[in-house]
Every structure is written in structure tokens, then in C-alpha cells.
Length: 324
Image: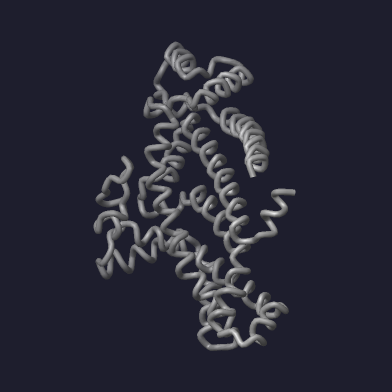
């Protein structure tokens, strides 16, 4: 297992190196932040002074080497707009995005798994067909439209939930969290639900397909022939064997939820990384954009590693393959 972790660590370093080059070229070679940050009435001397202050006077390859050297020491540059370390800005917004993404993933699991399991065990029932029809809506409806409808119904017309912001937070391990207070929890419900709709539909359909396939396997038929109770057959022989694809998709979807929560955070004015990156793109705040993208890449690598390690607890064959 230690050799496996070392190999994955080397792969992660290679991926980060390649992505740093792609991100740098994609962001730093496009647009001129000086035009966004300097007044149109500024003279040439002021423009040149700004270019030097932002470090944009050096050749592109030298800027990249300087960026790489600073990144190895944990410095991803200073924000052009806020004049603060870009990584510090990202870390300050990360708890809000993580809370939103984890809340949406939690909702997808506790709602999608039981509904998908029920639909797979009783595929011809009216309730199962209704579940599958609703899951199609979850795939089809645009996130921004659903968010606006949630605000219109539950915030404007009914007045049950707040429409924007994060609400009151409480500290846990030195990090502010909304779900620890009632006011913060009410602020979290709508954006988390909006972000979870697609994930719920995905988990439902994936679970149903896994159950339908597993129910035809010989070991399930043999378990039934031995006289095991339906609940034992379902939760020991069926449910356990469909968890690997579900864990795979949920793990990858957690990464994509963190990366693509931009729309939801913009609609609900949620103060997370997504809203920060949109504001930074509007003013071409390059260090913040690069820090955000590199952080997302690192998150994807970490989540994939956790998913792979989870396999070893769900399937003994994965452990044997790792030892081999």
C-alpha cells in the first residue's frame, strides 16, 4: 500500500506540473489586466509603472519560472485587486464552497440511494416510474433557472427561507460554518438543494441500474435459494456490490460540484470560491484565477486518491491487485 501511495504521489506531482503550465499559458497569455485596473485617463508613465508593479514587464517564460519558483514555496502571487496573497483569498472562501458542495453531496446520497434502490427492486411499480420521471427533470432543468424558481417560491412568495448570503456562522476547528447555526442552516438549504438536484438524479439512475444488473447475478439467486430474508439479500448481497460505481461517481461529482458551483453561488450570492473567481475573471485578476484553478486540480487529485483507497474497503479484489 505504501508503494501504491508513493506511485500516486509521483503521478499527482506530474499532473500538477503539467496543469501549472497549461493554466499559466491559458490565463497569463490572454488579456491585459492593466487595461482593467488602470483608469482610461492614465498617461503612459502611469501605465508602465503599473506594468512593472504587477510584474508583467518580464517575458512570459520568465514570468512562468518565477511563478513556479514561488508556487513551490506556497506563494501563488498577490491579487491585483485586493493586494493580498491569492492563496489566502482562496482559502478564506473555501469553507463556504466546501460546505455547499458537501451539503449537496450529502443530500444526493441520503435521497438518491434509497430512491434508486426502491426503483431497482420494484421497476414496474407506479412509484418507481414516478421516481424515474422526476430524475429526468433533475437532469433536464437548468441550474440557474431552478435557483431562480426556488428563490421566487420559497423566499419571495412564501417567505420561508432567505434568498441570499451565508447567514450566521459558528466556529469549528477555527473555521466558520453555516450549518452549525439555525440562521446559517436556513441560508444553506436552497443553494444546497439547487446544487444537489442533478446529483440526486444521477445517483438514482446509477443505483437503479446497478440493482437491476446485480439482481440477475448467480450469487443473488443462490442467496435466495438458501432462504435468506429479502432484506439480507438486498443489503448484504445487492447493496454492497453496487457501492463501487456509486462511490466512483459520487467522488468525481464531489470534485465537479466544488469546481462548478459558480452558477449556484452567483444566483444565491453565496460567498464562496465560485463567486470570487467570477469577480476575478471580470477584472482579469490573474493570480487569483491561477490559484483557484490550481486548488481545484489539487482537490480533484486528492478526491480521486480517496476514492481509490475506498475501493480497497469495498472490494477485496482491489486489495489483492494493489499488493500484486
